[in-house]
Length: 571
Picture 1 (tube, rainbow, N blue to C red):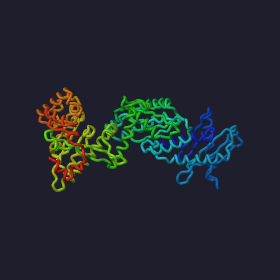
Picture 2: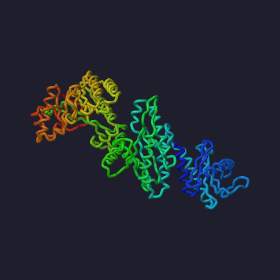
Picture 3: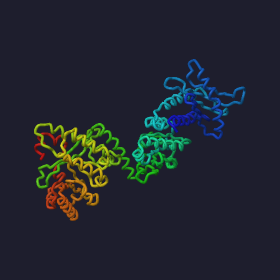
């Protein structure tokens, strides 16, 4: 089901409904195509009859002249040649291409016992032919030939205008499972072959359905099912899933199985909110992915996990826009010696997004979405570039005192093969010295990407950079990993610090971590140091450094690097 076939099929269905015809067809000599729609038992015979008479109507349409030359042709008594039996009633509308040339004709057919076509039907047919001409010009996807994202919006809007207020339509959102594996193993050209294979499988199932199939982008598809209740849409999604699973991708002597997840969401015609329903279907599809792949899930407003995904989808678009438009600001939170909190040891770099109204948005509002939709590498790179630019500019000012900063690196970031080379290039271009930088990795990120973490530490450590193990105590990883990684600092997770005044187990764990770190030549940093009392208790437990509101609140980096602030706080 390519873009044109899907568009024409939708048009024929709608044309038959609007004008109450027995059958309708579109023929295009330039395309060498013939499309037909009829729901009656003698559809095959009617199809053959319309094909047989199409050339006659094409010739009559071309040979017309005068004011009505480009308008519909009305014939209420049509016979076979040589006095044959009466065929029926016809209203034939020309379809022109953007240059004004005849691209084809639409033939609207009624049996003789049905009402005649009258003058009121002529403007309706003319409007339908203009709509078809516009629909045929909709953009298509170059890989699959399906309707593109921009095209399906217009087509769905056109169909929704004609559906009754109570019609229950549905939207499917499909995502090919593990296409990135195909791309990594065989390259993007083979990945495109996988996409085409899936598109063909979906099109074959939908060939006899009232459906619009579109490729959104990448490995994602959507299907609009007009006047199709959600239970029926789920069955269709199941058939689509099975059709994809039945196909495989063959590369040389290897066979790669294909599968797809679908989410389904209802669409009320009265709401005419295709985007809203598509977002719901996407949420359900993501749930299917996380619940085992090769599945179909229905969007349920009451499903709390789907509510969270729906919120993440709403946030991720705004987050991408903010990053692309540079609407973010770097803050620094001081890390200081617990014995002399007024002497700042260094600052941890924290990202704040600026929303459309100029308000700061804290990470707690967007990190779930950023993690779910793989935006952490983009965020980390934005922070690194911004921080290095600030440090470079500040270092050129008279009286600059070197400032030590800590930058967080996520697991997905350090797992990227190109990241280390990129980071070293940024350091070279900025001229920022490695001694000014500490990179913080969580226990999970380091252990999950052991080889990359070791290489990162080796290369950057040679430049003077230091490394902190963030959130220590939450990963439950073997201490063997701690021995094999070149960390200079352990940051004790705040969950052990908040209740340290009253929880003996937290106190015991913090003391043990501090002693372990000291024995291994590492400093300890406690997170969430909120009060002087916590500060004093941590000193008793031999923790050296602290971070939290009891030490200092986050401040904009440009303010920290201002000459007067630098003289007051840097050490």
